[in-house]
Length: 181
Image 1 (cartoon, rainbow, N blue to C red):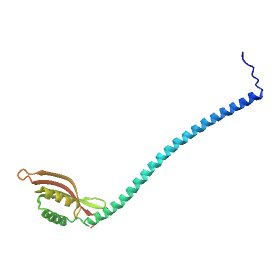
Image 2: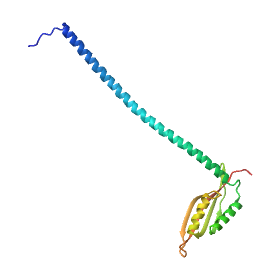
Image 3: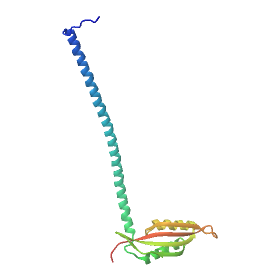
Image 4: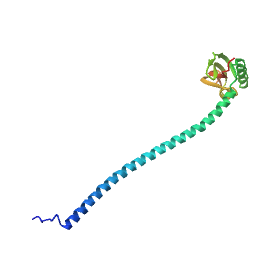
């Protein structure tokens, strides 16, 4: 048998209000939990974005430091570049550096000047012969010596008759500032 419930009694009304209050409290807590979870997710994403921005800032700072170093190197190289295309002084430089390293020039061919915006390039093809160690030192001196050259091609082969001697083909470029005549 089902007991009769008096819906108008004070006990039932109190119990109903308490139950409704608890139900509303549970719904509000669930809503707050979802809002908290969404906020927590956004916070993690924001922290990730901040870390990425910090990495980019450090990268930019390094680039700025490198820019200073590169500008210093550029001014040094610009100082080293002769003020005009003087092939006679280039040939004189080659003669002295090849003599210093005891290198025999087999063939030297100077190409047409390539005009760039701030400087001119002169392609130079050199065929030479010498002791391996002397050739390596010569190549290093050409690369970092008192007159800048860029080595684009290098071929080296040992001579059969003299194992310590090598034949070397170089394609390099000399530079001069682009000053109007």
